Amino acid sequence: MFAATMAAIMVTVLLALCRALAGPTVWDRLLAANMFGTKTVLLIAVYGFLTERPEFLDLALIYVLINFVGQLAVLRFVQSGALAPPGEGD
Amino acid sequence: MAAVVDTASWILLLGGSFFCLSGGVGLLRLPDFFSRMHGAGLTDTLGAGLILGGLILQSGFSLNAAKLVFILFFLLLTSPTATHALAQAALGAGLKPQLAPEEDEA
Image 1: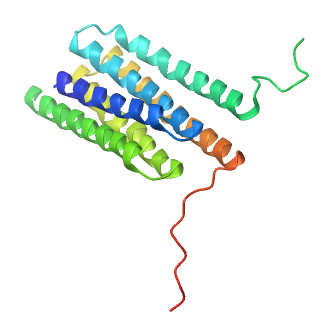
Image 2 (image 1 turned 135 degrees about the horizontal axis):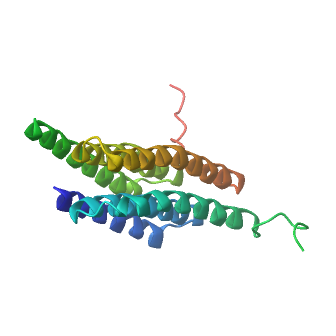
Image 3 (image 1 turned 120 degrees about the vertical axis):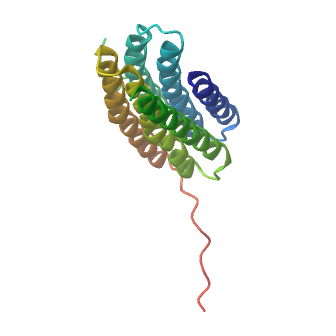
């Protein structure tokens, strides 16, 4: 059962990769990359159950937050060309 | 009792995989960026919720179930925020949604 779920999630990841490669705009690629990240979280969690190692759940928990922060950082960069408003920092 | 929990877990996991797959197909086949976001959002909420629900049923009442509840909570909190930020950025950059063609009068 976990193997079937993992196969389905991997097919979904493949579909998201196709959209990331083919997306005509940068927003399509960002959307596909975000979906890739959330599917990775599910993949890690299901794999932890598949191999009977519950430590993988900690990795999944961390990666949800890392994916979110990374997505917002790339979005800010794409939107305004810089990661901070001009004039901030040194 | 264990068989009931196993069956329910099977159903939830397979339902979650089905919704993940349909969201992925929607991401590929829908014509416009804003409609593709529906596909991606479907996998993030229904797909992830059902799969994690199936895993929670599998692990009983333990620390693993608490961690899975936290994963679900963070996923449900962060993915709509990221989607909203993405849509707002795309609209601000000038991407227009593809609307139905205007109907002729009479």
